[in-house]
Length: 170
Image 1: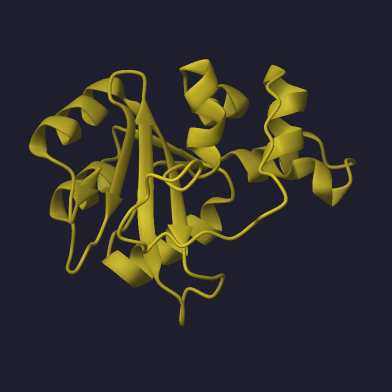
Image 2: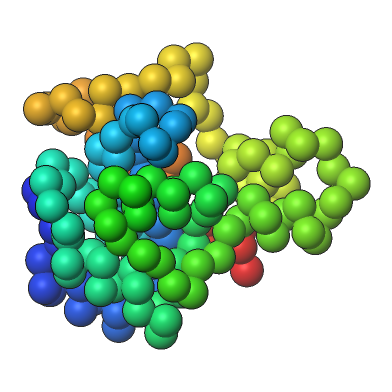
């Protein structure tokens, strides 16, 4: 867990990996009014990396996410990209979106089939359950409660030890 920004070592490791799964957790759905509270990165080299309590511009994170040599894989990238730019002034290059790719490759599927759980089940056979409670306090001082320190990406990755956003995109 990093407060404010990632370390130079993590930034180097993400660059060396060449591809990173990225997810954000927010206080709501409106990038103009709500807050970006936590961002997650995952590569096999780094494992899950959490960034929160950002009060300014996280320059090391911004450099990695802006690096065109590193592919950033999101699920529903427009949401995450808006919050990253509005909340932390981070502009992302070389972004891929599993939801958009699903819609392009399988346009006849019903809309709900492009959500993260059915997409992972359909493309790589991974079952994921978010449970019935769909809100968390990502700004809480202690994120150690079960499920509190993991968003979509970590819930899937934790049990299987790998980033599933990237294989789902591929």
